[in-house]
Length: 123
Image 1: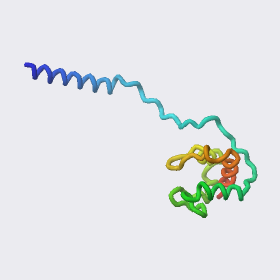
Image 2: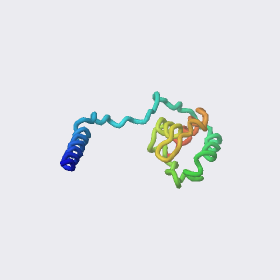
Image 3: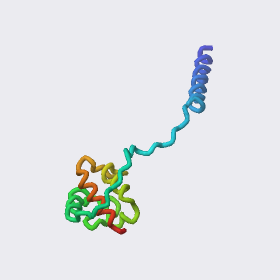
Image 4: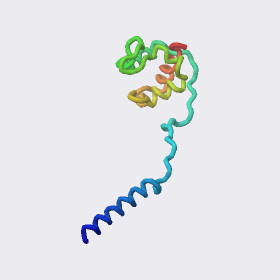
């Protein structure tokens, strides 16, 4: 009789657990976008090509190639045709996918200059 009691108790516990999982869980919240912070509008100024190329060579070349052709990371030779300046800025500063953010390594001026330089690619 003791075996039947324990088996019944385990079955009841399993049924309660399944019931809690199915009906007792709060509804799923919509997946929140990553904290993008306040909207930032990238100032449209002529890029200092020499400064942008130096920043690119120091930080981006290993993954995006010496001719912006891609490699480990995607090609950037026409990135201005597919992404807005704000999107490029967010990706550089905060990262995306396997790319780390460079907000802590590059100054604001360097990120804005690199953004404007890349935005001119393919546009």
